[in-house]
Image (cartoon, rainbow, N blue to C red; front, side, top):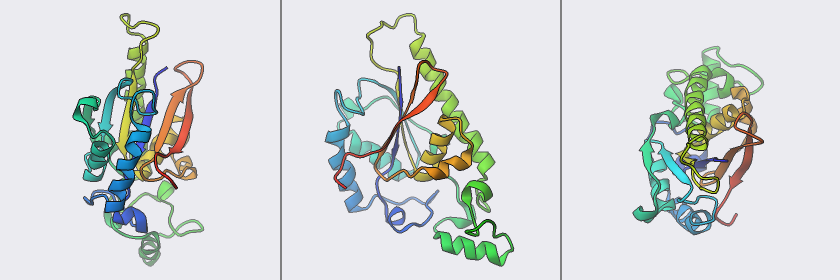
Length: 228
């Protein structure tokens, strides 16, 4: 059965130091470019986890760090799958918290009397002032999940498809928080359960099915093509 592969972009300066990076356009660090480039031969190719022959469509976030990650993973244009820039898989819009560390957000919210929970702020519950709420992320992630399921079902039910045909897979090249949102909603979990997953930069997460298209499962998390 077809699968969905979710790749988080390579490291940037802010992803390395923990600042919230939503709409800000940051390049991959030189080390980040090297990590993704070195990962490509291990992750991409015939019979490998990202096999261009089985990927029907690649959805890539409009952010440059995601675009560059895709280019480095698939350096040869001849081997790149069909690609679509997809706004729905952009990072969580952090609004007033863009570029801030968590402790700064907590301080701001405390001054406004908005601190909540044991940590003072939980993005999975509180969302972001001037940005997106958890409810908006549910809507956005569910649109992506529903589209992928529709593509998978159409491929499986194609009357011209032969039993031994390969294909139908979907690739996402996206971001940290959105990857975790996607995993939670792919599994049918409440959005805050995304906080239980850690998705590393440059890693691959696999969503698949178990005994039919009605049961979604996690097939792999943080699959890496580079040495730790």
